[in-house]
Image (cartoon, helix red, strand yellow):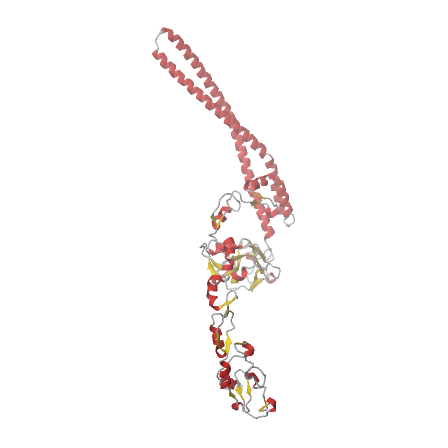
Length: 545
């Protein structure tokens, strides 16, 4: 059968597969003797019956023709292609069949025509959309939603056409934007806007006790006023938040510090009022001294004029008058001098008292500032005690993913470090390190995730090198559990897992952890935030004590 088909000529397509649209009626043509359908690629049996390729096996049984009980015996070598019938059918006129194509060709040339027909339907390899072949290139260059397009703002980034508006709205560093706080500054690039947002006088700020539960937000001066007026409220939040941490010693120290601050802060308003009053008095006295100095200068000029008049007038009648004037002027000058001296002594005394009060206020303000710094340090320590994990698990939340990745692409911040975590209370100290734009073989296309062995307080009691298995994960935020994870066992010969001689060993992990195209979906990025997790198998930890 196969040999017969291989040596035959004038092959036409199977009409049951290609479904040709014949121009003329084909009912008058002879059908296959076996299947009673169109006689395509006809074969002639020795007995004179004509069959299509599908009917060869149907009409033959035990080497005999079974059509109408013919019974003629024959072999495969006696079956010949019916060239005349094939030519007849191959020359039948058919329509192309492609939409909008009106070409009429011979049935035998139909496949060749359809493969080169400008109206044939092709599939775009990028968006999988079906489109006319002659328009495919234009579609790829101008219409395909998945084609890569350079940013029209010339920020140096290319993205899919369907994502261009999102890129301009949320990512392009050269996009021109106005201040969202409506402070009056407009037409800034996104990078300039980011810097401006950190300094904008109308930007919304959260209370620094937000992590403790305070939800207040407002302008800079509003937050400052809220902080000053809500001291007792913040103290209650702080104590409530850390009441269950288990570190009673730290909490007791914090309570003592807060009580001292409250006692000392009670006198601050009184001292500030007294200081303001003394400053006002000092300003008033200074103004009085200036006025008296002006009077003294005026009187001095009068004395000089009188002396000149005395020299120029020698008549006896005017001498007595001039002497009287000189006496009056001298008395006035003496009185002015005495008044100035009295005022200066008064101001000197008030200045000393005011200076003392000012110094007291300054010392109190300095002390309060130191207490405020100490309170912030205690707050930071309590936050670290709350967040640090001592069971070998790191849960790392990275906000502002788009901005941080852009900074990584631009070379501003190549990598990020996580907070430290421990394998046990006295165990190994580690942290996470991530390259949002990839590192090494993953640079530019992958997120790279590593762990770093850090110098700890109990390294002298631990076994080295570090050999505990580590699992790195990117968490699915859709709730389907489709987390990305990779587990590796540290290489004892690597310097990354030797006992640290500096604060940080060389990071070790997975440079090609996950492609950006798979990462930057709703599954792993939500609200511009991703969650990374590192888990150390602490069951194999064997401390030396």
